[in-house]
Length: 262
Image 1 (tube, rainbow, N blue to C red):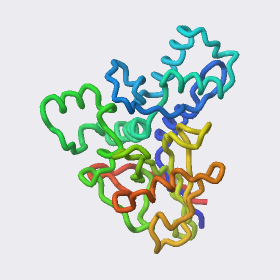
Image 2 (image 1 turned 90 degrees about the vertical axis):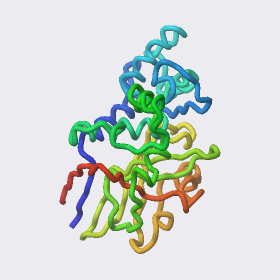
Image 3 (image 1 turned 45 degrees about the vertical axis):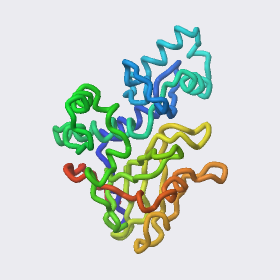
Image 4 (image 1 turned 30 degrees about the horizontal axis):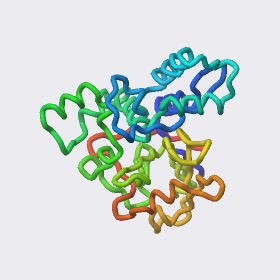
C-alpha cells in the first residue's frame, strides 16, 4: 500500500506563489537573493525576505524605473532582471513564510514568538517584534535550542527541516520537508523544497527528492536526486559538516500533516 504524508495545502499554496510569480503575462519562479552585505534598508523584499506579493510589486516598480518591458521579456530575462535588482528570496525567508503561514492558519500562533533566541536584549527583542522574518535565520530556526534532532529515518515527517551548510563561512542553509512517501509502511522517498543560490539558471525556489534506500543508514547515505550537470549542491552542502547538520523538528509546534492512501 502506498501512503503519502504531506504538509497542508496552505503550505503548497505559498510555495506555488513563489514558483509562479505572475509577471508580464508569464509565471516566473522566484530567484535566490541573500543580503550578504547586511545592508540596512526599509523593505524586507530588498534583503531576500519578501512574500510573493511584495516581490511582484517590487519587480513592477523597477520595471517602470528601468523601462524594462515585462510583457516582451522572456522568463529567463525577467529572472535576470530580478537578480540584477537584488530581488529574490533567501532560504530562511522562504521557509519562514511557508511554515509561518501554516502555523498561523492552523495553530493560531506566530513562529517568531515561540522561537528561542540567543540575544534577548531590549533592542534585539524590539527588532524581532517589528521585523520578525528579517531576524529569523537558518541557524536560529534549526538550532538545538528550537529543534530536536531526528536521527531515525523512519520518523521523518513533513514540516521537518534539513539543516545544511552554506558555502559562505559560518552560514547555514535550510530545506523544508514537504512530503514523505511510504510503501507498505516503510519510507521510500522524501520530498523537500528550498531556495538555493546554486543550480545555475535554476537557482531560487525549487523542489528536490531523496530516495530512502536503507532506513538503517543516515540521511547522507541515501540517494539525493537534485542534480544539475553532475553537481548535487544540496548533498554537498549537507555533507560539508555532518556533525552540525541533520534533520531537525521544532520543539514547541506540531506541524499538521495530511495523509493520502492509494
